[in-house]
Length: 538
Ligand code: KIV
Ligand code: ZN
Image (cartoon, rainbow, N blue to C red; front, side, top):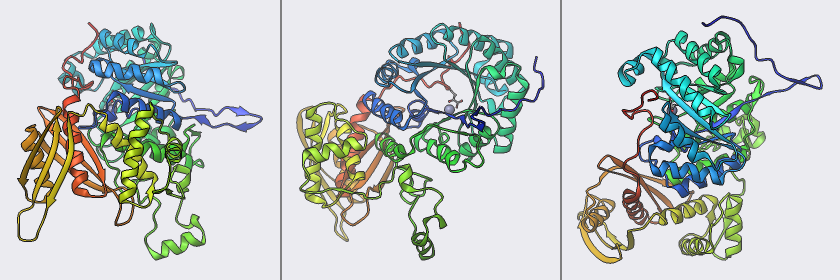
């Protein structure tokens, strides 16, 4: 079935010069990224992120898993309507229902892709699917053929390929390519593989699958061992021409390969890579902030490319070197990935037009005048507390305004918190819950704990606090603090965010935001890989 032959990816030639291959960037922030516990996004938020990804010029946007829930179906459809340039993709298990649901949701897309998958590792076939290898091949082929009835652009993934038998992978890939798959994606679902092994696997598959030249080879790596980017790059060096990745490396468990790292590694090391992407890297920081703001997953300061310290030089020796020549310690320019050199943008006297213009430059468009007015009012409040307003402040402000639009059943009206050495902190809150004003007072181990207890006295959500984290948005003593609160109730996990120059107030806003999200977050959403009915086609 599989035959061995060597085939090199010969670069095309134009005017006698070797041309680089195109490396397709497939972003799955809205699908695999959303599978991160607590990272669920509303439809509006998904459309905002999709438009930011389009400005970034990603080739393919995986907008979601339409069969997961009506909410996911609606979000995929909304993204398909909004996006014009990038291909919009929907995930589907290898079942008739999933594929037709995906095709219906993707109908408005200018260019659509259906991505269907079934597991191929012995452990997944035996323990999860309870299917024989022959049945898996049959289901995969049937799924691809059905998907091809809706679109010419069909991707197939053998889930858990990193732990699958190479011979069986060859068999499945040959069969799905013959059935019409135009992209075959090799996922390291559990993040088990190592760079040299994964690169060798891609090379081997491309060489041994007889019709491998009829499909683009793609990779999709998870980072359980911190190797997703390294594994993806090793695959690219061995002929993969699509990388699946997410902004900030968001994703299932420890996450997926980070888009910004893959793109900048390939671009910075053009001496090594025979390909390049069409990504507009100047949009990277914006996208990163947007995804972090929407999901409530802060970016660690020492994160490559998008972390606050990625281009900061602290030691005297480094500073001295960079002043003399930035190339002594910098391999990329901060402005090339979207860090603005002049970060001070607006102040107390800035007007509505300047506010709107700067946000438009940052990629944010207001859907209605009312939204602009509401955000501008928040901006004015902020300028009373903080003299210098930076891009980061503006982004936090619009994120907060969008959060506020999440059906606000609970609103924070006022808050007073007292801490004094030697006494237990106490907080008093005033909330509006479903239109009714309610007050409560509570003590706590600290002022934030007291505030959360007081809010709970009023709301009685019974939610469990899983995470509380504070980040400063900009530098300086008057910087805004951005607080993330993660709550869980009945298996549902949500993140809430709040920003303020006062951290206790930011905490209260974040808690209230999380409570509002608990009300609206979908409860009956299937997980594409964990769902029990992830079996072959009926
Ligand atoms: O990690 C994985 O295997 C996936 C597939 C659905 C591609 O996300
Ligand atoms: Zn995945």
